[in-house]
Length: 298
Image (cartoon, rainbow, N blue to C red; front, side):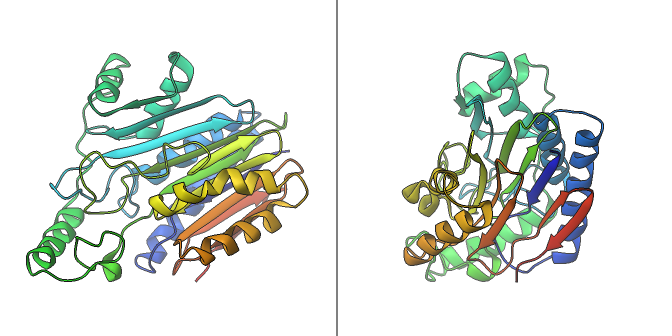
């Protein structure tokens, strides 16, 4: 079947040119693997690693900082056979999605978190890496000044209003290979200035992502809202009677009713894609039948 779709997060309009370039590179690299008879897992992982390595997304390098000025990252992967693995609140690694894949393939567990995830990464031979950038530190310092000035909030009522800078650009990918096998991934550092130990939707299967014989969905946006709606599982369930696009549209309408700022990408069992969001922009691209389609969705 060979279809792949990726997203660069449902967030603001900032750095759209740079994010477009990275999203296109990611989807083309993943599709190349599919064209060479590679697996959906390898294609989705490759696309996600490229996005994690870009400083323009809130995942891997360039991740937003929590309230204590540290990077805590989440990542997950799932297949249509219900294999899955995730890491939560992991620090000091370059590509959290690779650790999530190790959890799925090398352990009897589904989710590893915090120090346990860190130790597991070391056991797997993963080198320590600081994903913090000058840009993320500058933003952190700017927002902390707002906190100390006692300004308002958006997602966290006890923190300052940072909507114009808000950073929830989770990245994700879905791939279907020539055998019709699905794989879906997500990676993020979560909402900037979150409390230490906070988990968003990314490592929560059924919320941040889901896959089964009907198709696969990857979500991005405000994690708490996505978790409350089990948004990815709901969208996948809708594929029993609807196309990927219609399923996404129905799920997005529900998200709007609950004021959930989010986005979804999807592929159904017929290889049809779906995408949509409630945010200002969601850089996304897919390749099907060799044709690349990109949209910012502003």
